[in-house]
Each structure stands twice: as C-alpha cells, then as structure tokens.
Length: 146
Image 1 (cartoon, helix red, strand yellow):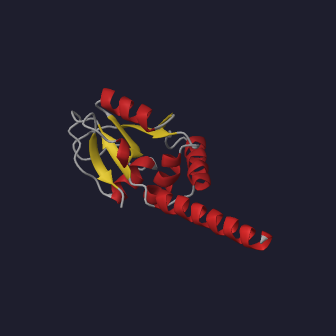
Image 2 (image 1 turned 135 degrees about the vertical axis):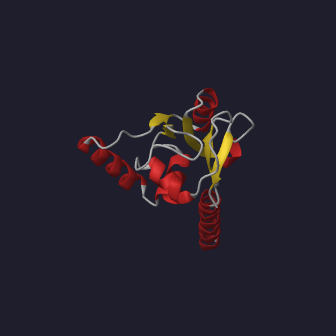
Image 3 (image 1 turned 30 degrees about the vertical axis):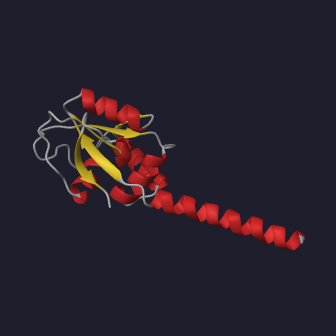
C-alpha cells in the first residue's frame, strides 16, 4: 500500500512538472512599441540585432530606447531563448562584454510586463518586450514569437 501511494505521488509530481514546462514553453512573447512611434513590424532577425545592440533603429523609427525586464522575470528567460537564442547567462555575459568594450549599453531594465508596457506606452521612442497576454491597445505589436 505504501509503495502504491509513493508511486501515485511520484506520478502526480511528474505530471505537474511536465505541465509547467509545457505552459512555459508555449508562452508567446511580443515585441512592442508606442502606437504613435511610426514603427512597423519586424522579423526575429531584426529583433535579435536590436536587443543585442547591433542596430539602434527599426523600420519607421530612426532611434530606439530599448527596455527589457529584470533577469528574474520569466518573460526575460523566454525572450532570451526565443529572440536572442542565448541562455540568460550567455545574454548577461554578452552585455558585460559590450559594456566593457564601450560598444553599446544594455536596455533599461524594468520589473515586469506591466512596467514595460507602461513605459513603452508613455515614450514614443521606446521598444520593449512583454508576455503576449499583456498586450492591449496602449501598445503596438511589432513581432510575436511562435
């Protein structure tokens, strides 16, 4: 009887963990801009260049102020994986090298989706990323990840 209970507990735990991984893996990220910015849709390659400091503009915007989220944000983990194709550690290391070499400064970091969305909605030159479920009419979507 004890063995059956332990087996059932282990099975339930495995199911819970797998469902968490599936829901995380299916999270959609949206690259957003202010609706008045004039920015048009971008592709993943452009988003990657933008958030790695290799370009400072997007179609329809001459210059961009980038905003991102703190490392502890689950949106950031998803973003770095899907857009930059880096782990959080690689992304952080990349920006450390860029800062040290004087080539670029990283995006301004905000705490969560709500702060990024509010900042982008209030600044016509801002571009950031949020979980796609946070998007509303206060921002314009430039790219949605698959």
